[in-house]
Length: 353
Ligand SMILES: C[S@@+](CC[C@H](N)C(=O)[O-])C[C@H]1O[C@@H](n2cnc3c(N)ncnc32)[C@H](O)[C@@H]1O
Image (cartoon, rainbow, N blue to C red; front, side, top):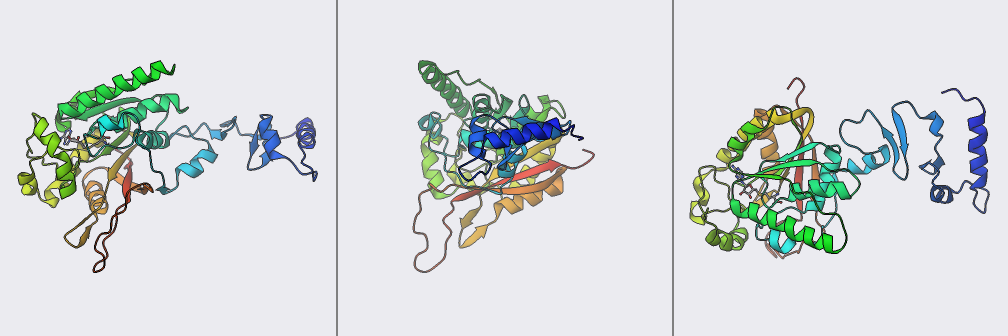
């Protein structure tokens, strides 16, 4: 962009105003004075292209961004392939932990901020006690803008818990004088049926945590209480056996791994119709170590989905939880991994779908 000279003069005047003891440009002081500073340099806002805008304290935002509402500076961090964060138990964790497979709402909010824009629609077809839905509500109060979220969950107990979480959380928020979290649209039933009511291309982000094909012993024990208490204790033909799912342990083997993969792939094929062509499908999946071998479930699931649904794997983010308890597995005879990470598969829609 041509400069008539005044811009240069003004910039130099500002630079002179914010010099440190050695006569260099004092970026920190300039930032404190709310001048647009990017990478230690004063930004000349006259030089921004028409599609660029300086957002105070956040950097330069490109209006052509269809993925999220992040500035270039924020994008740099948001595209890191590892999320090394332990999310402390919060948002009525005690209530939500009855599920056993719940995800931290703040981690979900972080992912929602990376893969959607304010006002977008987020769908979680395996919603559990609502990690995704709570994350979508958090976005409103954490500067990234409310998303509308829809959740499908077939176990009414988990829906009851989600509703109680919102009620208790909002009572506490009101008592602290904070604005309440928006309640989201949780629907009870089988996702295979409920997806039929979601119009094509209407979802901007599908964020979910799939039910597993197996359940290890620890998770079984943890879920015995839920199994006993639930009126819906049956392990049905879709056979999800995992932390948080309601399962009859004796029926654990009713679905083979390849059946599970085929079932998931078919479901994602159907879900993809609901996702907007610019949207993303983001899936939590942990790998497993069983019977002396590593089950690379994330890779298997990614390949099964890619080969069935019109989706292409764009990334595998690793959520590394440094706060996870470590146990001594296998010592001193066999190397057994202590799983302190989960995979977050990121798919985009294939062109033309
Ligand atoms: C891994 S959990 C999701 C946990 C969730 N991310 C949270 O934060 O609570 C998977 C959930 O999918 C539900 N589920 C499994 N198969 C389903 C189906 N066909 N339709 C709807 N929900 C289903 C299970 O009951 C379980 O609660």
